[in-house]
Length: 347
Image 1 (spheres, rainbow, N blue to C red):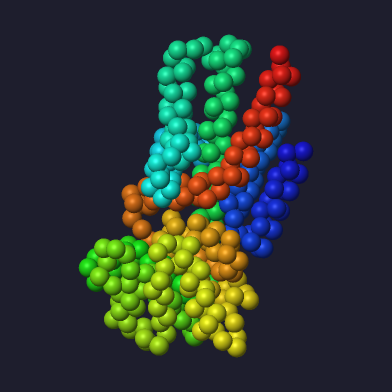
Image 2: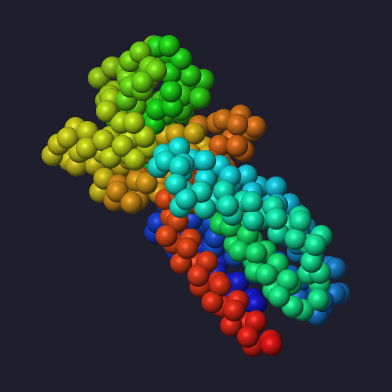
């Protein structure tokens, strides 16, 4: 039975990857498929130990599964709490200090309470209200850990491109701040990656997207274009989008300029007409925003230092959490109802 469910999950994942990979569902289905594969291998090892011992490949697959599960369990307390804290701070910064905007910070405080202090005060091993509350909080927090893992896997999946020349017509490079009149190292890495994609797709144009911040001397797109010209990109191949202030506007304003520039042969009919280039950790959110705006595109990631990427990925997930908070609430309500029904059936 597990084997057939595994095949169904794997097939669903392939369908998502072939039709619309710009969704966290791509990462979740891969995670689910891996879990089902591990469950199948373990069941076969228990049922047929002689067969299992003769197949080295299954030993390797099982080891990979156990390592990933260990990382997931470690991430549960060490990653989830910072994600909620960062998410709360992001919301408060963008929307003001209000009770509803402090919910994620409250959740982080609850996690600290229930995962450290609560088990020291109450017996969570014996059936009763303390145990039911403890396991409810554990289930909810694991839900968010799985969400984070799915988000990260989806980002990785969208970074994979086998062919260099995909027939891309427009390469949109997202801004990331200036140092004086020059791009920061982070922004230079995005521009370099955008130029690489541009050169691998003859006939493409670069769209430098970025407005002028309060502390910047000129629009980011102008500085980005100057940098590209300095390394050999013809100025006529560059479009400057200088009005955007965030990723949502980057995508929207750039797409408007692309439609205007493409004229009689409008871009966007194929998914590969437009490529969005940003830092690797930011690709998934940029693609999700593009999808919400009905902009067909693929994503390319620029390399970023590991220590910065880990922290930035948490911020990206916090932003995703904010953008999809209604869906998260619905999911939690469903889990809560099912959990209450389970408790009632056991008492």
